[in-house]
Every structure is written in C-alpha cells, then in structure tokens.
Figure 1 (cartoon, rainbow, N blue to C red):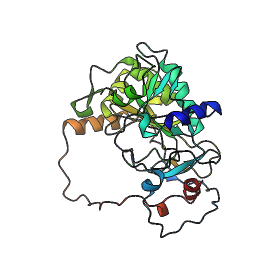
Figure 2: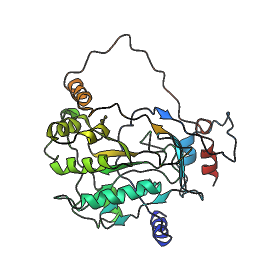
Figure 3: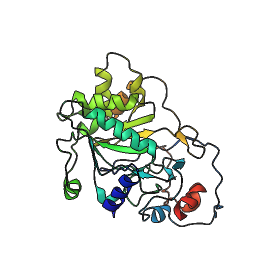
Figure 4: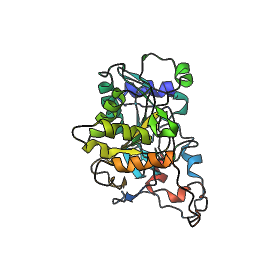
Length: 312
C-alpha cells in the first residue's frame, strides 16, 4: 500500500516523505492560536475516543486542501502529500510506519536540504526519518509532536547509498553522535554535520531544530562568524541519532499554532547548562510539585477541524 501510494503521488505530482527514527518528545507547546477556519463539525465535548486510535489507523491523506490545524503536539493535517520513497538526493526510511506524509512546505524543505547535503564531503544526500501520519494527529507510538505535518527527522547517518531496498530501510540503523550521555559529541561527528544543521537553521521556513546538548555546545565553540543561526538549535534529550526540524506555520495558515519563538541570543549558555547538568546532575528538589500522569489525548481535545480531517 505504501509503495502504491508513493507511485500515485508521483503520478499526480504529489510529494512524498517517510521517516525513520523516533526520539524524545520536544518541549511542550507555547502556542499562539490563530483564528481557526470554521469547521463543518462541532466538537462533542464528550468525545472520549482516543485520538491516536483514530489517526493512527488512517492510511491515506484527507481529500482536502493542504492545511495544518492546532499545535505540533495537539493537532492534525489536511491534504497531506508524500515525499517519494527515493529521490535524487534522499531516501525515506522505515516505510512500514507510513509516517512519510507532511505539508507541501515540509516536503519542499526536505528536498532542498537533501540537495545541499549532497554537496557535503561524505554525504550523497540524506536519510529521512519520521515526518507525520497521513492525516497527522497523535501517533500510536513514539513522538508526542509531529502532528501537523511541519516536523521532520533527519538521520545523522551520512548516506553512502541511495538505492536501499524496502527491507534494508527497515533494518538499517542510524548512528549515534553522542558521548557521555549527550554531554559531548563522539568520533562519528564531523564538521559536515554542523554544516548541514547550519543550512537547515538558516532556512527561513524553520522555527527550531532539536539536537542533543553536546552537539549544540560543540557548534557554539566552532562558530567564529555570524551566530544568529545558533538560536534555532535547541538542546533536547535524545536526538543523537537524528536531528528534528520544526517548521513555522505557513503564512496565512489561520488554524495553525506556532510555538513561542526561542529566547533571543545564540542560546549557547543554556546549552552549556544542559551539559553541566548531565555531568553533575543537581540533587532532586524535594519541593518540586508532582505532576499527575495525563491520559492520552482524546478527540474532544483536538481542534474542531481535526474531526473533519478524520472524516474526509
């Protein structure tokens, strides 16, 4: 089914994208809600259906125009497109997951970044990890975000082949870049990784990029010129087998909620604090409030438009 959809995507000119590793969830959203587009369905406040059980089994995109609704960790996407399984400078990984769907802006970004990657020493392009499900929404496993078609995971493994079979894409693993639980980079890290991350961060479509703390600190120490791009590189747990790119809501996307922008500055002091805490963990705070566990997101908790997306 995945291969058929990809072929269909090429036939009608749809882009296609699939992803590969999963990582720790990004920070909670501090969204700035727009004015949502009116939905033909009203949300039943008592709709207790678990959203991942609804969106996790939808195998095709909705028959709607391409739009993102809600926030990165509580939303969905209409009219998603796919990145072809294989392109001139990329391959989509873990095809069985059917998470190679995204908004057109994300697919275009992946294509552009992969073309740049192919110019780097030792890289023939990129391996693309998880993007979103066909209609976005919460996933059955893995990510807490990746729900609006505006997130993509890029493997840290430099591709030496772009003719992997479907079976090879299931069995091949990326490689870790971290040492000392993420406090430092290891010997797999190269200046080309920094060049690729810098190119992604300088793209105006990108809101932020998640990577393990030691990588951010390493790049902070290496950059001797313009440091503005470092602001978008944000330390977060995991993210040493891949880096996670998050795009801003497209211009005019009324129902899409952006995350609050990163604090001003290059963020290097904050990344260093992450590293310090890894090397010398602070003692637990006995007065820290206890957060009760939250249940899974229900359909009633998603934007009204997501009910239309699930139904179409």
